[in-house]
Image 1 (cartoon, one colour):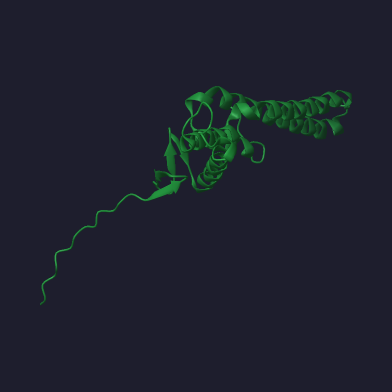
Image 2 (cartoon, one colour; image 1 turned 135 degrees about the vertical axis):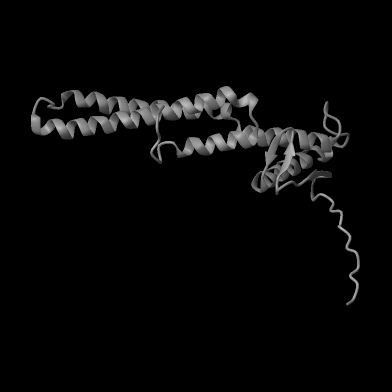
Length: 183
């Protein structure tokens, strides 16, 4: 029998990704910056934002660098990262989201109010009327739950990171599209 050559375990260098002259370690397909984990989609968004900011910093009219910031690479990464976070921050969505939710709640409340004229005293109509009223109340509760969830997202924003904001947003989008238990 032939002797086997002793095998060497290859020391693997961590995979890295380069974005505008800066290297980031890839862990499970993600990079992490200040606790914020960027998946493949967010990495590409970040790359585009950093490259845009770098182009701005390197324009001929800014040959000496970006006034008050210094190094164009640092500027591009810092502002590009801030731009990426801005897109996902719950507080940024507040004005539009509160308007939409308030509008939906108003519609639900008006529909419930319209039920006051329903003839609940008529025994054959009572059953279907109560079913309709219950459905309207459940729809209003779902909108209230969405509003409560969103308010909680804003309250927790500073304690959470990008991946948490995205998960909460995805959860928000699912509320009302499936049966939700209100506690």
